[in-house]
Length: 128
Image 1 (tube, rainbow, N blue to C red):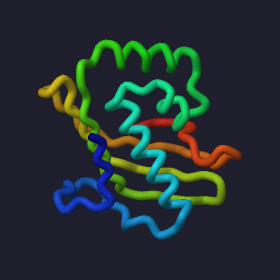
Image 2 (cartoon, rainbow, N blue to C red):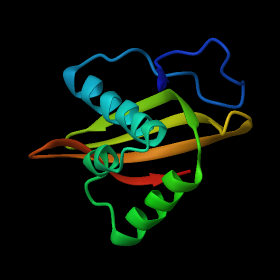
Image 3 (cartoon, rainbow, N blue to C red):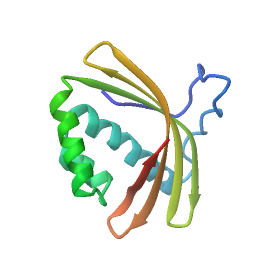
């Protein structure tokens, strides 16, 4: 189950406060892409992953496929900290916590750069 939190009472003090709830259809659409990204990882759905990141390179696809094959289970919790919409571009900052194979926990920030094209919003770049 992917959990994308719109607010988080337990946000660490060194992080920006969580972003307010969606305020526009564009904001909602961007947040859905981020939620679908997490769901693609949890369900190991390469097709969905390619849908949310349409510019996936052959090397990225190979690495993603390998990661899906080596991980038994992965729970992804994404807390949206901010959404910055600028026309057909968006920058989304999140706090992410993964539980891999039931015990290994990894927490880290991520920044997504999205662009809106003919097919809707898609992730262009994922960084820290």
